Image (cartoon, rainbow, N blue to C red):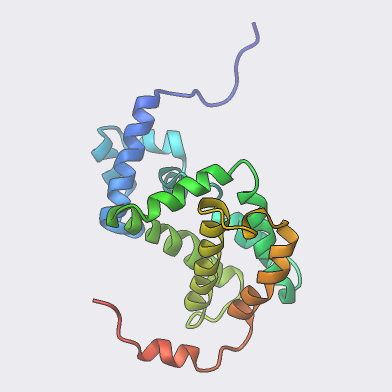
Length: 210
């Protein structure tokens, strides 16, 4: 019999214990504050076992969130090519993932995000650490303006995902992907690359919510 190659699947209970501890740590301490060592302690395992199952902290976070994709893949795809088409590329890749096998996981993620304050906090960490922090430098955005620009894109696309895949509002739910690209791409292009007169001055003067 041929020898099997690759990593052993391991104990599913251990893996789930690590994921449960990771979710609690990320929600309580945030992405930056949660350490692999603390997560391992919470799960009652050695830190080396966390790395064995998940590799990096980023991959552990994505697994804990049950994310349908690594946002970096979408960011990289949007960044490649003519900057005048960034918005359209972003929408196209986003829809390709959500219309594919990863869509069910995306729906579950969105539903959980609005379930409780705890899950909302976890989702917020996902947006900040996995999307905003990565997209600003990769898209060559100004450090002062970039976070708001990318959060506008994230908010717009979260609304589209909610209406198309969770609530299934027609005719948006059954519209061809390219029709949505044509409709939304220019808006995302404006958020990311075009001048937004007065927006950043107003944002800087706003009082943060308590």
